[in-house]
Length: 213
Image (cartoon, rainbow, N blue to C red; front, side, top):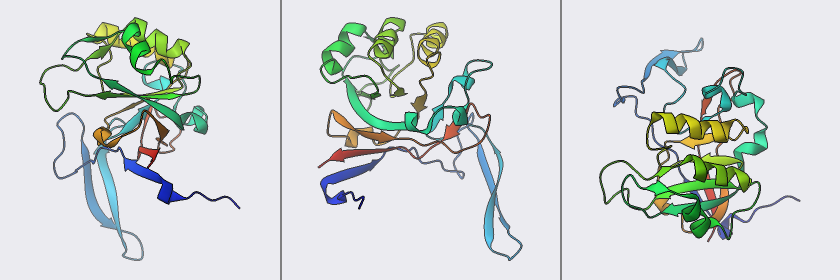
């Protein structure tokens, strides 16, 4: 009999709450209430896009012919994860050496990497950013998905190059997380299963972390 004793684990909702009544200017999510044939309520989405709220980006987001959300195997969106707690000043580089220092001892092939900006609530300005070299280190160590709470490069050009390093190897990226401060352990389990729509570059998701109490 398959059984999981949930008294031994904490389930943490890492999803950003979308509020249609208070939309972000560049991330619309407009809905109106309607009815089904039996007069039960339904909600019609009238305008939105694939990067609203917590979402998973597939290679199709950046590359013509890149794999879409449904073309990646389901197991890539879940698995053992490591927490990279980034304690660096605003706009600092997250170097290969720094990643080796904070997660090198627990990073194994097939792991999901969750970055968490430790100074986010205390300092203003741009967050610390990954570099091409640090992204290459993550892929060399076998990362299968990146959960992002940091910048992708110092500028747009470097950000695109970093996406290239990661997504050319079919590793998706999860963005716009919430409640990351509730994670207590360096090693945990993470899931972010995207809404299943064929051909989509990105999919909305309910992201959760599961860790031992």
